[in-house]
Length: 59
Image 1: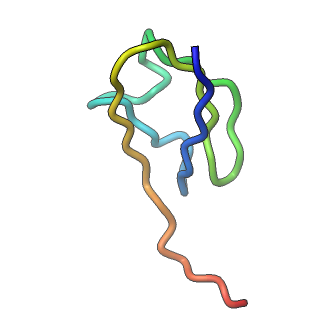
Image 2: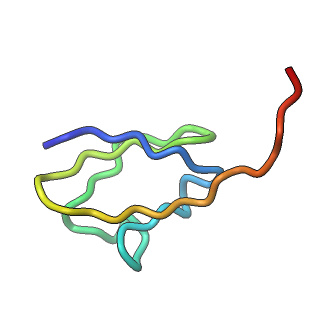
Image 3: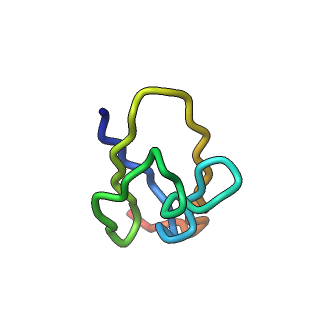
């Protein structure tokens, strides 16, 4: 098992393959943050897709 952090503008929109991660049997959502999703995954190959923010912050 491995823990992953997926940066995402909308964590609820993260997909593994063609479906939302919450529907995946091999991926467990550990927690959500405003700009990221933390997952626990088993061994294997995964393809995650997530919307990213296009907002630019000033320094």
